[in-house]
Image 1: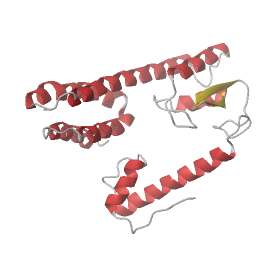
Image 2 (image 1 turned 90 degrees about the horizontal axis):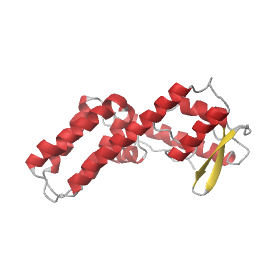
Image 3 (image 1 turned 180 degrees about the horizontal axis):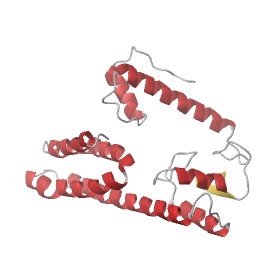
Image 4 (image 1 turned 135 degrees about the vertical axis):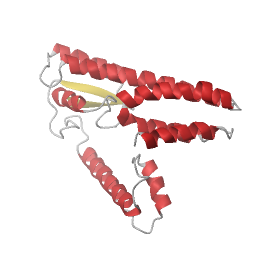
Length: 228
């Protein structure tokens, strides 16, 4: 059932819904604008869910919602195999960003799946939809993104390994590392920056030391400065 929200909700409640739905840049919106984008988002999810349930069978490609064409690629999620027409799947990947998300489950595609697709591209000599150069570029971007994310996660682990966040440690170690890796992220993977930085802010908020505010303020400054 489609549930739409009305003007009776307070703006703070609507902001919580935005966070749950992963809606970005709501901080500068008016209440009515937030309300409209939430309802639009809910309607899209409702339609997508209805269509996916209706066409969720092995003989239908989830991308085109038409009969599955050979050759196809198979992806396993939660012990369930789903099949995609190969050409359409490659075209979808060519238009997506470096994250390589499953069009049906919205989960990150595994390295095994990407390697499988790469082998199929070579075997069937597919050139028109996805050139070798563009494919390799996307693979390299994804690998770079995962490496940067791992390094940033290590900084978070380091923060929570210390009960007290000494000012010297914050300004001589933690912030310089954030500056270094976030510059790469902003330059090469800007579309993913807001969600990552916002997640780090929420995470660091749980640290017991009051000096955490210096790290949080820097991360908020990054969001404001680069209009993320």
